[in-house]
Image (cartoon, rainbow over all chains, first blue to last red; front, side, top):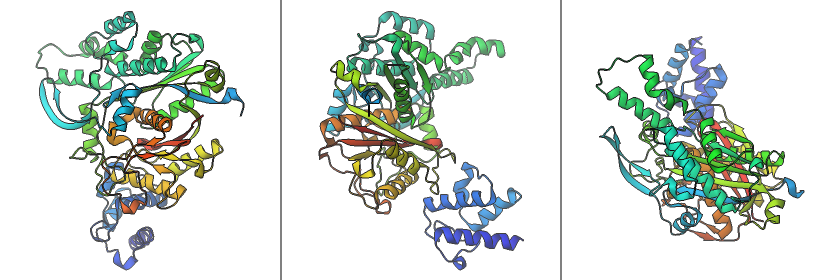
Length: 79
Length: 424
């Protein structure tokens, strides 16, 4: 289940930032490693919220920089 | 369209760091003067920070020809509390009324007022509470002492009190409203005022909106990472780093076209209409994935029966932050095309600062002056446009025939709006 969730999110991020899934490692930084700009990062957050029907607190958005951060956030939300 | 539904603007009353009154303001804009200043902020006698701001200088509420009896009455009511917010609103309303030529001939029961302010009276309130926190007074503190000390000042935060003081002082007895739609307040207020006239409730409406610099506001934006250390607002520039806040107040008079023609009033422009959309996502971050801002602008075009080619000039929010400029640029290019040459686009915040609640209305006044003078002021501080945005703001003043112009705004908390004006 956890793997499915991770793969699901990896595919979602890959689609938004137009980078192949194999390049999106758990700890690969969206900004420094993948050249994602702040606009794309916001799109990731919005897509994540829509898909999992959750609200990410505004103050937490700048901290979401890797796939692992998104997964941890999921754990905190118990989804 | 029949004349009694057509609404025009016949008076403007701006107060800004580069001039009080339309002539002083436009003269400064035309000579590319800015009101940027570097200022020490003190609380209770202690220096807390030094920040860039844009300050209205040499303001005295007694200079606007308002009946001294009312000013004295407000002074008495307020006691020790400063009333800068109220005085800016009062001054802007009076300036606009005087400019319209209606001051003496107004049917006061059919003249209404819409005021807006994002945080009226709050700065003074915070300061007094802060002083109390710092005080080493040994006096017993409980609800009674708190109520005695702050009760009256808290009462005065109620926004109806601002309507009360302004309408009373200027003899306006028609329909009135107080609104607050963050940075887009000016556009919402214009539409509300136009609606009041169209409905027949009033013949004349004044809209006045103000805001002023404070350490609290400046600190808030600094905390969000939106304050540029060099003090330069650089809309749509590659090296943009945020904005500097400024004092600002604006008053606009609206009436029916047929009334304005009958009394041979000077008409700045016809207010054609507007469009709005509430994004409803975050407060300080716009949603790139949404088309809320596009909907607002498309709705403005639809409501005014115009196509996008009719717009000669657009003045967007142009706030100079990384994300909001990108959000605006995405919306503009979605509507007008990548690297669009028309409409012209320029931004006014480098001249006067981000004047918060008053910004959309104050920038509308500058836009109306630009329309009148067939001159597009340059976007200052724009050395190099950000190529990723595909938007080219005007870098040097342009002289060209202007007929139909748009002011758009994408405020905090997702208040998106656009208003269209046309020369008559």
